[in-house]
Image (cartoon, rainbow, N blue to C red; front, top):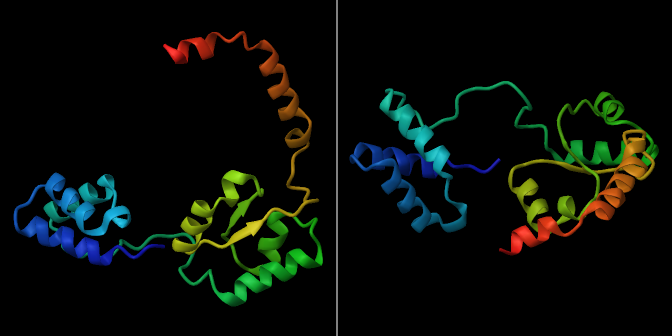
Length: 165
C-alpha cells in the first residue's frame, strides 16, 4: 500500500498552522501532483486531529497482514497454479496459506498498464485467471454474451439520440 506518512505529517503541520482542509488539499496537490492524498483522506485526517488524535499512523485493523506479498508467496501461488490450472481460489488459498490476493480474469480493464501499476504500488499480488478454472461460471460464457446480443437488437437508438442533445 502507498505510504502516505509524509503527507499525513504535512496535513498535521497545516492543521497546526490553522489551515483549512481545502487549503491543505490544494497544497498537497501542488506538491505531490497525481500522488497526492485524496480529498476524503485529507478531511478524515483533519477530523482525527480535531478530535485530539495527533498520531499520523494508521489505526490497527484486521485483514490481510502487510507481509502477505513476498517473493516466496508469489512463487508459491504461481507453482500451485502451474501444477493444476483447474484449482479454485479457495483451493489455492488453502494450499498456499495466503488468504488474500487480487484475482483477475484477464480482461483488458484488469490487465491495463495503469491497473497493473496500481496493484503493484499498493502491494497487491495479481493472480491471473486460469483458463480452465471451475471459478468461471457458465453464465460468463453463455448468459452474458446472449444478453448483450439481445440488448443490442432492442436498442432503437433513442438512448444515443438522448446523449447527443
